Image (cartoon, rainbow, N blue to C red; front, side):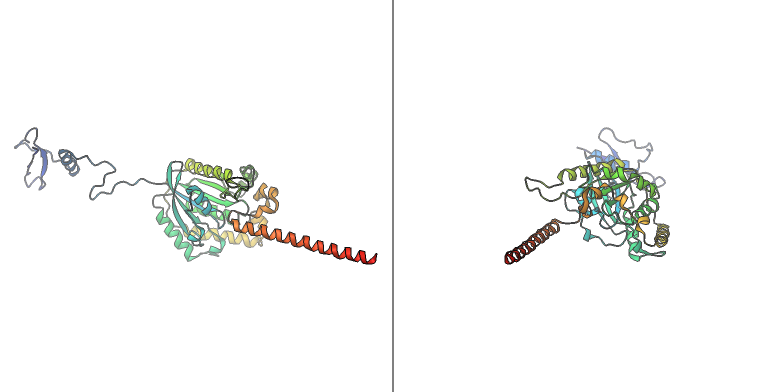
Length: 361
């Protein structure tokens, strides 16, 4: 049988009972032994009961097991950039809906996404727009959202993903870049650019080659980029699948690999001073917009930044990924109806003219 002996140290030593194993030999009765610490006594008792020692994943009362740190990735951009579609594409299912978020700046939602075997937390964050600030003020909703966002990022930020739509980048691209990269990330967090809406561009990478110089001219620099589509398109009429299935799968792989490759060490985000810097940023942008008298050719994204897609695609260049199939079908039906009406009118005119000619004869 197994037995345990103990000796009670003198009151001057300690009031604790020291465990010892007496299966091999009894402990010395008159020799003072160094008292092991609590953890050594606990694990020693477990060994005596043939219980496994607690490893780093074992929960011990009073001690929380270590939690694996998942990298935090901030995905930001203006409304309509395609962030929700991008999240759904990466997740392989409908994980995000635009209606889930508020439309105030810094409203956010978090999603666990697997990127090439590594799970990250992807935070979908609404970008900063000029109407979120009036002069030097930041709206209460935006300030509150920023406060809650930074609280959620207690483990730090590992990557910034700036998302824009190639067909309508908007006039807040530079503002978003400054707000997230310079102010929130302190220029310490890696940043990449994801350009959506390029399903009709062949190759999709052609957009970057055309606009790389313009991006640098606007004072923006990225550690990587991906030119993609986030839609599959209409079903094929002569077979299974959809029109943009190949581009869609290429895009999903490209973004996953981009995020995995560019993840950096976690950078802790502090809230102190952020609102003041954001107020100053909005003040500067509002002053610049006023001086340009609303000339978007100077302050906004001009035709050159839209890339070759607008030149190649003609009237279809303004379509974005948020148009659903019902809208496309409705437009197609209306077009056919209008064509038939025009042909009918021409036929009626032809009959009238023919009747007139015959009456004259």
